[in-house]
Length: 397
Image 1 (cartoon, rainbow, N blue to C red):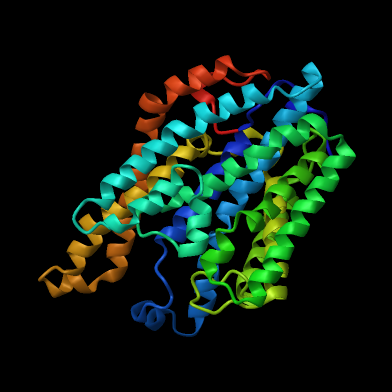
Image 2 (spheres, one colour):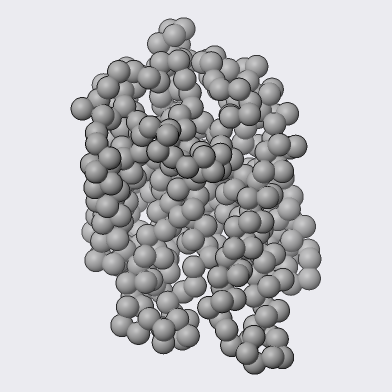
């Protein structure tokens, strides 16, 4: 069942901040979890290495969850704006998006350029980073493969920006039935690309970084917005837990059962139908996760999660650089240590590195939000049509 319309006067809900943090945590684990193909990990896991790799692949769907949540919130915000004033102010929408996304995005690119020219960097990737500057990072990665630069994580921001090119226009001019048709068209286009990419045995980056493929998750978020109609699910805690278990089951089967998400397995492209079915399970898992969180009482959420859920953009942008720094300052140095007892303890080194990486990511995101992003957020607030929370709680919606 769905309850009354608590969205009417608010843009931000703490449980959605928790979803953002959960999505970031999945991505963080995906980028820090050791591969099961490492001989030492295989020896430790023995017959469970494939399941471990599949779980590692599941964490990659945190990015899909970001996309679905972004589409859900953007659609909700624009529909409410159209309800209030009879239209969507497209110019104001783009100003708000620019002030929220661009400053930190280009700072991340600048840091990436600095890393490229540092010892051990890859200056040859500077041209590719130039394509990131015009929000073509996803297509560069799809065509040429992932960058080694820590700014590589920004490719997903370019997918978001491409979504923004049409989002305000369709909400402004399409009625609800036409919007349903538009979502169906997005899903059909995504599946047509998946069918083609499976037929040509495309590489993992060619599939994962394809904007049209990722639009399936955006369509899922929009459809959820239409179905709920600004109402929140009124379901028991055990039902929410069951939805999360079902969401994980969808993601795990996509990775372990049909191996549709083949990024960490080293496997070849599984073919057209496994890709189509796997990405459908990805979208379903995202929707189930959103439904599980929507309407959760703030009292059930730890305060630190609510807090970190307000700075997910910074967490996402900076975590690649934190991984880059701690890997070079901790893991590589300890692994090469002359003392055999230290160099052989890979497990404790990984745990130590994981803690330092997460802590550094949080520190950078906190400082960035307080001293770099806040002035832009104050400017963004002046261009808001629908009233939002104070700047101290503004998030990327």
